[in-house]
Length: 446
Image (cartoon, rainbow, N blue to C red):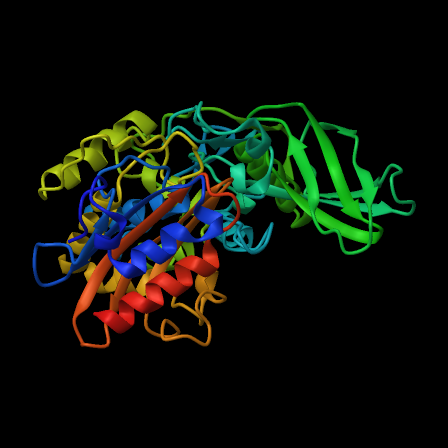
């Protein structure tokens, strides 16, 4: 175990001393905890009980909890009902609905509707998102995030990853960029385009500003000079987008809809669904979540942990769950399931202990295999490539402004296996290379 802060620097573990001395870490706070899977005493710790921002390493807690509470085979269900003259889409919070195609899932719905004898809809196409609370975006998310695809909050009816694409063309550096295409077009939304043209190769420096239910979205920043550059925004009203797209698809397939597309809660007690759309099993969604760090997936399974689908209820559920397994959650602050909130706070010890307990649970294999492999896959594909970490360390990374964090597992060269958490906040620059070096030394040492 590392010595307390007040002891002379030479008594600090050399690997840790080197990490803390890296120029990128001059202004940083760091928390480190490395625990053997067989044993209770950490082999290394540094400020392991200091509360730090975890960023997307929060997803490791969310996915581990979901696997244990909901189960690897759990599926989200979207149910299609006929009630009176209306066609009702009763959402179950499925984050994969329409994820790969705007209309792909609808083909099966229409087949089922026609088999039930439906040739026209005299009423409305209604999307019911009441499975989750109506507030989709936490108060604590940054304004610069919520209008963009990665800031799309979860709804009871998620659709098309709750995102849409905007394509621009910029001809003159420093001058306005023209908005040439929006797809799919959010219903009822207008756009204020303030996007400018940046230099060749300057990449995506554009942002969409708006929020849930917004009727006006503005775009600011720059896109590189040239044509056909696309950025992605968050749909202001995913349920309405779903109902609108379904109405259009029905009409394209010869089913007349006399009413409109709308959103509302509909009581369907006693009615049998015409069709039930199931998501892939939770284990597959967990793997996609941790490999690609998909905020919407994480926040949807987070909301699904409780019947009311509320943030407050899910936070309370997670706290009870891990306290019940003996984890000390002093100072543990959670505002979402994805880690997008910069006000989330937890310690390296809490993260390492939760990971250790998650792996020892009967769902532990699913959880560990959901984490990307250093140098090989997902968000870890470029981490530690060509080092002893490649193919050996599995981890969930976390990164928001001035936060870099990694949590996961590794077998040391001795053959013993460890759970670890390394959190850094407020570094001068990215400490990624220093962290690669430090973790590689840990693997070699243990």
